[in-house]
Image 1 (tube, rainbow, N blue to C red):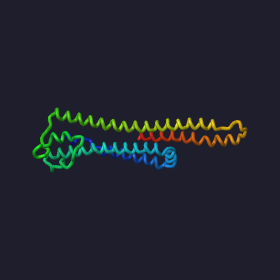
Image 2: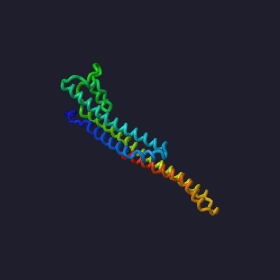
Image 3: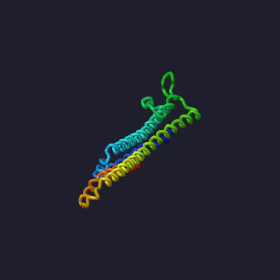
Image 4: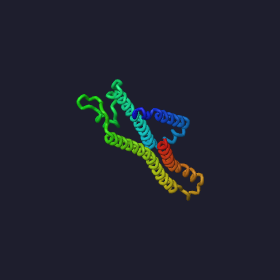
Length: 211
C-alpha cells in the first residue's frame, strides 16, 4: 500500500522537459542578440553557460533517481505479494540502507519487515540526503547569480579605467574640434566593451538562475 501511494516523478519530468523546450524556443528566437551578448566576454559567459548546463543535468538526475527508488519499492512490494522477484535487478541508492536491512545475509534475498523505529530512522536519513541534494541545486542557482555579478563588476572596472584613459588622451589644446571628436569616438570603444561584459554576464547569470 505504501508503494502504491508513491507518486512517480514522470509528470514532473514532463513539466521540466516542456519548460526546457520553451526556453530553447526563446533562445532560438533571440539567437542573434544572444550570440552578440555572448561574444562580449566568451570566457566568462562560457563559464556561466557551463555551470547552467551542469545544474540542469544535476537536477534532472536527482528527479530520475527518485523514480528509480520508487521502482525498487514497487518491485519489493510485488515480491511480498508473491510476484516474480525483480528488486534484486534494481539497485536503490537513497533506499540502500533499507535494502540492506531487508536482505537475508545467508541467501541474499529480500525478506521480512522493518520495525517502526528502523523505518523512521531510514526515512529520516533519506530526507537528510534529499535536503543535501536540494542545497546543492540552490548553491548552483546562487553560483550563476554570483558569476553574473562578478562579470558586472569586472566590466565596470574596465569601463572606468577606459574612460579615464580616453579623457587623458584627448588633445583639447589643439583647437581642432574634428580631431577631438575622432579621438573621443575611438576612445569610447574600450568603455563600451567593458559595459558589454558587465551587462552580458548579468544577463546570462540571472537568466540561468531563473531557469
